[in-house]
Image 1 (cartoon, rainbow, N blue to C red):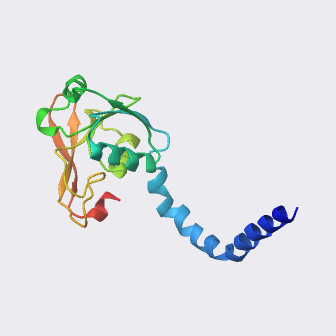
Image 2: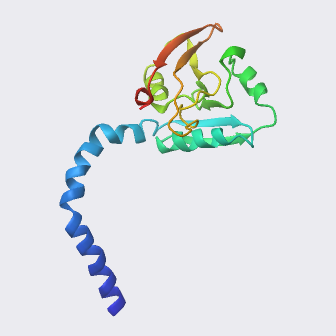
Length: 173
């Protein structure tokens, strides 16, 4: 009884004491800041990756943090999946993500652009790619380093187009 009495008041006063402060902070968080963490909430995808690739694991954690329901598939030859899903050679990166709707996201694509694309997919597109592995892109963070990069649109006819130009880390958010 004493333990239950001690733990309940210890929890309640902490909540009661801090109720006003978190409530004040909750309003801005649930407005714009909450959006990035849930923008991929209703999206499920399979990520084809090499079992030994650490940055792929980092990107999956990042995408899941934004709500993506990801299933990682460690495969011996990721190029087979890139070919299966028509990812052009010059657009390839370390992992290939395929949504249940069949859209392809190659490499370290920021969640913001995945959500934007999926909300209104261009009729001629199959997905997006971040070619190579740019330092500072989601899953490729290293110290405070950042390398500008482009998010490319992959089209059904095999062509590509610039979807977004990322010049600063803030543009990924």
